Amino acid sequence: MAELELRAIEKSYGEHAVVNRVSLNIHDGEFLTLVGPSGCGKSTLLRIIAGLEAQDSGEVRMGGNCVDDERPKERDIAMVFQTYALYPHLTVFDNIALPLRARRLNFVERLPLLGYAFPRRRRLEQAIRTEVQEAAAMLDLAHLLHRKPGQLSGGQRQRVALGRAMVRHPAVFLMDEPLSNLDAKLRVQMRTEITALHRRLGVTFVYVTHDQSEAMTMSDRIAVMLGGELLQVAPPEVLYRDPQDLRVAEMIGSPKINVVSCTSWIALGGGLPAGMHEKATQIAFRPEDPKIAAPSHGAVRGVVASIENLGSDIFLNVTLANDAGSIVIRTRPDAPRFEPSRSVGLSVDPARLMQFDSLGRRLNGIERAAA
Ligand SMILES: Nc1ncnc2c1ncn2[C@@H]1O[C@H](COP(=O)(O)OP(=O)(O)OP(=O)(O)O)[C@@H](O)[C@H]1O
Ligand SMILES: [Mg+2]
Image 1: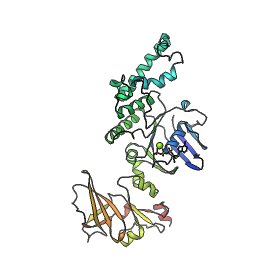
Image 2: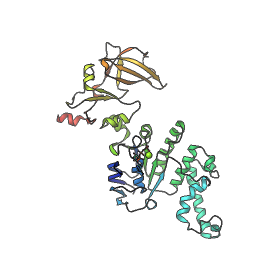
Image 3: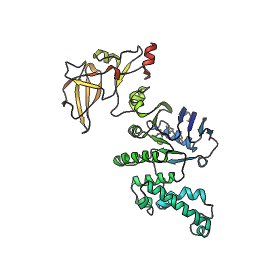
Image 4: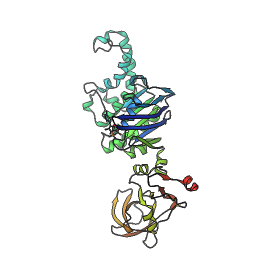
């Protein structure tokens, strides 16, 4: 069992609180992603789980047991970093075999030539070879085992780092921005590979990224972190459709969610949610939610400021009337074309409008009912 439980974890560096009472239950076999902007404490939290950093207070539990007194090596965890941290002078094979040799061979047996004089070493090497080859086959590295890291592409190096983590058969994989050194195309390909690996191994993955699209495509659940706090933990589609905090709403989804002040929206004649909350100061809606019509038919008037055509989607940047700000609208290539400077009318299904109070807290149906 590798359920991972964080209980009220706190960590400060000097005066600076970096992790602020974070509690989180990560299920056995789950792919959980910590997402948030640079400096929000993601790596610190991951290092605390790994035991590389000690928290000031709170508890880390694995499989129901507190592991705070266990050193990193004793925790049933493997970590993959942004920098591959491979040994440049060792071959791919030896890099992957490293944790196995470190664990199974004693000091003398590990000696390069002399070690082989011991029959036990030869036996163990055979087993290690089989395990390295299995991992390499799974990661499509079998043909590269004799190479040194310097002779590999970035994606191949990252796969070696994954292989080295895999052979330890940890109950939990921790990954800290493992794809951020790769180019865009490879990053997308490696996302699929890592999720496939997760499915095949069936163990718990805790994955850190500041890239919301990575988080959205890979995770069972996403934990959104900001300034050391967890704002919301939920499956990707729930974070997208039902964010409980304006900062979550703004962090998840690309292009960003549209936010308009309630007074502007009302002045523009935009429809209001059925139960408009009295504390609502801002409304928000996703770029795909507005419907565009001729200016006279739409409730809200705006002017197309610019157009971004991505082939599969077309994004219209629309400046709202009355200086109410600008919004982005996603349209399909088969939808009617709009030119810049064109006046448009738009409407949003009131059920799609989210309301937030002045502190950015979501005002939901339950609070509406109570109000
Ligand atoms: N050893 C340290 N001493 C002092 N401050 C630190 C230390 N390690 C991290 N910090 C600070 O703690 C905060 C959180 O750092 P952390 O590395 O956890 O952020 P992060 O979310 O992983 O960011 P990034 O996305 O840039 O990797 C930052 O402000 C950082 O400067
Ligand atoms: Mg980091």
